[in-house]
Image (cartoon, rainbow over all chains, first blue to last red):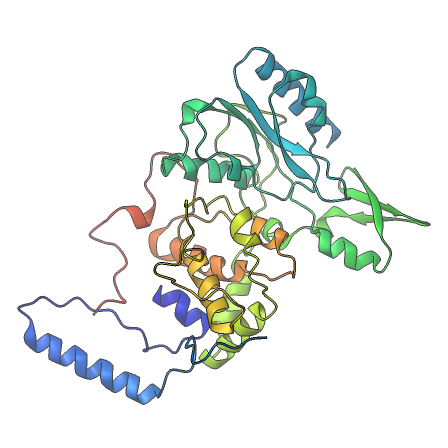
Length: 56
Length: 316
């Protein structure tokens, strides 16, 4: 899914996958922070986002 | 090609007369040139309708699901791989089928032929060996079939059926040294914005008729996600975001299952090359799982099994 979305032009890094056990609180914090940082760097999502229906 | 047709009719007649099958699924000549259509035959007297030439571009496996009777079916390389996929997905039982194998030399891209003689109207197409003659009012032209193959047929490396009970002719030579993912690779090299622009442009003409879904043998869900309203997964209008969502989800539902038969592109009324979505997934299935859909009955598809060494690099 990640491969196809990025192939279509959704920015690499916008979609991330991780497996975190309920016991891995430190990993959870690390991942959340780094995802937030990556996404912040990419800016607001413009692709594959529907703001208002465009009728054409 | 005439020999194929004769042989198909002969086999169908035998199967129907001996009641080995209840229904025989094949193609018949369409009312418009180059537009052969599927036909289901139940009486031996009607086998004369059956036909085969390089314009059999639809996938007959569409008609296999939810059937309980015994079926005879015509299958070339890609169609036979769809039969395998159907059997793996429990949509049909092997014992129900009598597969008449066609060594295929590719299907002609009818749009390409129309462009070549544009604006004249084609009334008849006659095939002879590896060339074909196009006839219309006051004109007659001959073309080489090789130059007018559909893009999926041009890079096909499974022309012969992988599963069959009887062949109509000797197997044809498989195409070697084709580069099936040449176009996917060139998109992969693009920057992210370019990719987005490419795919947005690609589907911009889409009218959301769902012909691609309807022609696809893999799409047999009782209710498709695009038709559901509770919840409504995707908007039903021609909004570009909804259209993109439809296309990429349709493609994703075909991951590890698509045989690149090209039925979706053939039926598209506006000529969208939606195989660009499915081909990327086919390429990934091959690269990460060594998988090409529908080649073997013995192996489960990659999205269906877990192996400790499965591709995992995207999870951190």
